[in-house]
Image 1 (cartoon, helix red, strand yellow):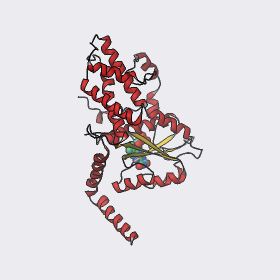
Image 2 (cartoon, rainbow, N blue to C red):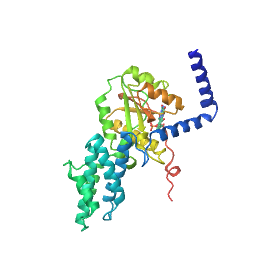
Image 3 (tube, helix red, strand yellow):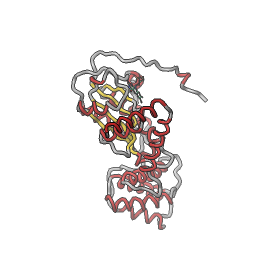
Image 4 (cartoon, rainbow, N blue to C red):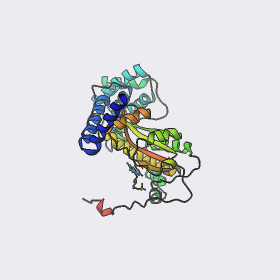
Length: 331
Ligand SMILES: Cc1cc2nc3c(=O)[nH]c(=O)nc-3n(C[C@H](O)[C@H](O)[C@H](O)COP(=O)(O)O)c2cc1C
């Protein structure tokens, strides 16, 4: 009976998602329902991730303010008071995590900046900041600003980037030599330096390298026909909705896409072959994939990346590019 019910349900889903446009509405409803369930608001930070995201967003406002060409003295008073209140509650619950130390570093720079600028610090506002930053402090500077030079950037970019970018292709024919998982981990480590909205870094890279797990995950993907057997690993890139707030439903995918691209380029740098894999699927399949791959409900699946060792000689699709004048619109 259950089997019959399951088959009937699958038939209805197949009809809705593949024969009608109704599936698009259902996918958007799933998108919204998860977003309302897990995202945070100023007045609603339920999970620890919500709190981390909200604190990161708010202290990053101070960091950004300190990095402007003409920083205003005493800027952001209300936001900073709220930041200290929220951070104090966070410390009571979770202790002085590195996030808190970064906030203290950042507010210390803010305090010193105002001091140097001749602002009167003998006020309730600055006393509150002074008390907050006086306890447990990171000697290593992990919050606030850093000074860099044009020369440093020039030195770091003095390599053949054009060749690097153009030498990457989606690979669908991997080698049989063992996958260097350490290099994969190093690539994901590098991809942490991807920019993200208010520095919230909502990404996750779920790495599968055991054959049976790779196949289990790939069973939810529809674009690996003909090369499933040679795929040595799969990365499922996700973002955690708990790190997002109002008007950011799209940001979930923007941040995830940027991260995925950097993972791909970092893997390319470490000599690991990649093929991006779409996760265009009905929401019911995304739910099943998350259950199978032990991905939390609060995460959205952005895409998969098939990975493998690179052969000595092999073919890739040319994937001809459109002309620049079809893409660059000079206004
Ligand atoms: C989000 C995304 C999903 C993709 N999905 C698939 C896929 O399911 N199967 C596949 O073989 N290639 C897939 N590709 C690879 C594209 O076909 C490829 O990136 C494009 O043709 C450009 O070629 P290149 O990557 O070799 O430069 C995907 C690419 C992206 C960015």
